[in-house]
Image 1 (cartoon, rainbow, N blue to C red):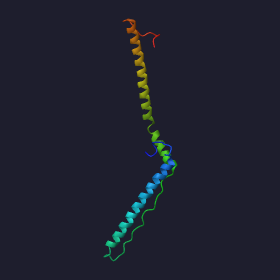
Image 2 (image 1 turned 30 degrees about the vertical axis):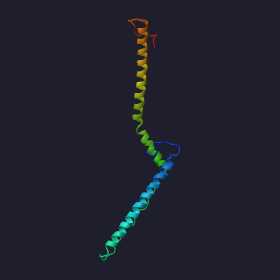
Image 3 (image 1 turned 180 degrees about the vertical axis):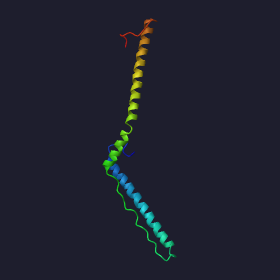
Image 4 (image 1 turned 90 degrees about the vertical axis):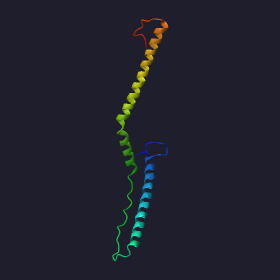
Length: 127
């Protein structure tokens, strides 16, 4: 599913599905050629045996699911991380609120020291 993560303009689910199918088809062809060459090699080596060896045909090519299936899997992957994303957003928002309140405290103390008053408290007028 990492093919779908960087959503650039040329990276659609149908493009990803066709790219994956092409790679899958190439690998299937490579494995089929290897299987058939192994069968041929085994037949040449088994010339002493009076009975002829019978090999099953290679497995047929199985196409990949449609692009909509990949979209569904990608969506489910994103939805499985929603709680984690909410936690990160909440934590970031909390840090922003903390920075804001720290600025307010700093401004309060700054105003107390500039007035020269040592008895400065929280008043409803300060912000």
